[in-house]
Image (cartoon, rainbow, N blue to C red; front, side, top):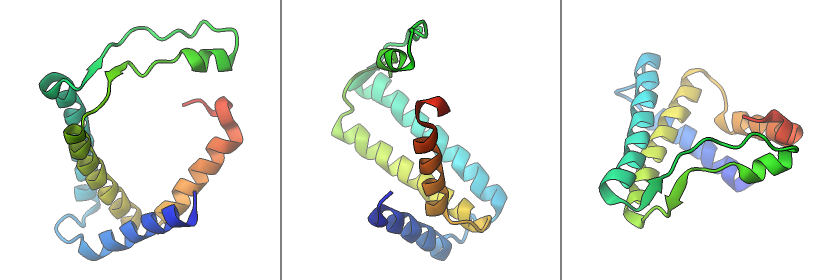
Length: 133
């Protein structure tokens, strides 16, 4: 993660500390994270069912490959099409709100979100494909 990205995350965390008033309780923050997770899922569903810019064509994933690289090449997102600008804007807003409350959670529990992201990135790079999630 570059300095610019880390700075953006730190700025978001600082801004969240300044402006979060109504939902300062850990319980409020936890439920707001759940709410925005549901809103993200709903926005994706509406992209399929209302807008139609994307489709979901789900099927069984093929895990019967002889190598991890071969298997990785066969994994499918099940998304057909491309999200339209309107749906993308809605999703960006919902994901942004989720990130705000994630930053608020980090503040409430007194840890640095950009440091947490950097540690996860380092773990992911170190384990590579063997840290499959």
